[in-house]
Image 1 (spheres, rainbow, N blue to C red):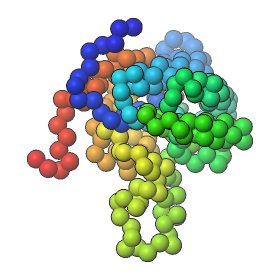
Image 2 (image 1 turned 45 degrees about the horizontal axis):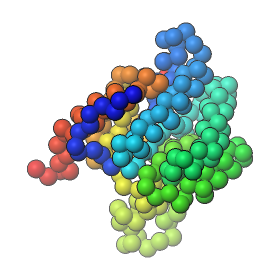
Image 3 (image 1 turned 180 degrees about the vertical axis):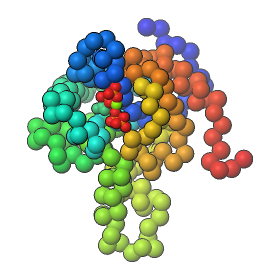
Image 4 (image 1 turned 180 degrees about the horizontal axis):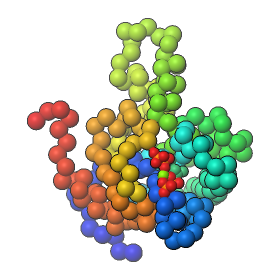
Length: 233
Ligand code: IPE
Ligand code: IPE
Ligand code: MG
């Protein structure tokens, strides 16, 4: 596919809530698992596209602290897809050269997934060009509470926005410039509540499995036209 024309001003950091897999499948008379499988392939395509056009940071919401409420078969399908994704990422590490980090409380993940995650992070540490953050069992409130707990014994006067940010899972990563949520839902569902304080928000009707290059480029053009004032004039 020919790369569409891009605006001059591109964001450094894009955050995406990968939503709408289930409704995409339902609209086609397919099981929800099919939606997750196509959504996961789409994630690879979009991540590669972001890298190709020079986006430095991409953060995606793949599984929330609330998603355990889904039926066990669906959770199992998602875990299977994470496994597959991690195995492929390890295989393609040399070729892709992307630093992969995980955000969220990984402790309830099955042991083999924890091992794959540890291996992925360790192998990809040496790449410092493009950085991908995958949020797994991630909830912003949980992340903020974990950060607070880790600070309880520090002198209160040392607490600043910077020292607090340094305790979040996103430590060292600049805040997202924009957040995209496909699927028509206009909410954050516990995603990056601290980090998105000044992000530009884009709610797009397309379901995630259909959210391709064209849809992303359209958001990038809209983003380039927004006037970010940060409270100033
Ligand atoms: C996103 O798609 C995947 C996860 C939340 C893990 P959904 O499964 O939420 O799809 P919809 O929102 O039901 O369409
Ligand atoms: C948000 O989507 C979480 C992820 C995409 C991982 P949900 O589908 O879980 O969000 P709600 O339930 O519609 O708020
Ligand atoms: Mg959803």
